[in-house]
Length: 132
Image 1 (cartoon, rainbow, N blue to C red):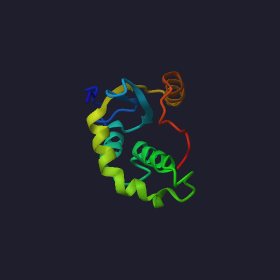
Image 2 (cartoon, rainbow, N blue to C red):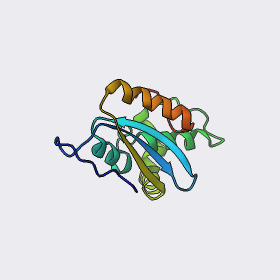
Image 3 (cartoon, rainbow, N blue to C red):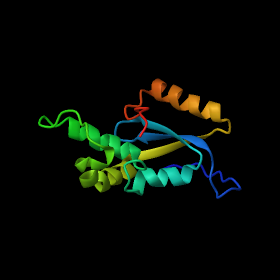
Image 4 (cartoon, one colour):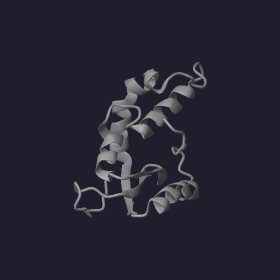
């Protein structure tokens, strides 16, 4: 895992865009933004909540929906059993397979615009831009 070593004065955090590069797939699979990048990355890799481990939730939902017997998931995010059953395994795979690219951006507009632009440019499959 590669993380830029820049530290700000406030809580050793930086505001930035981040990308998850899959070593196995050899491409960027997810792009996000955060005001507190260290905290956000920990959420993706270790937290249990569906709103915190967003990428893993999306992967679990996709796996659930692509089983022949299931179809489109219409329930509440917190009720997706596949997420709760597979979260730890999916997070372990994510930690093992992912390299992190960080682009520090101070301007909020540039940061939000860049997330959309780079997601479209790299065709990052796991970006959904749905609110939760």
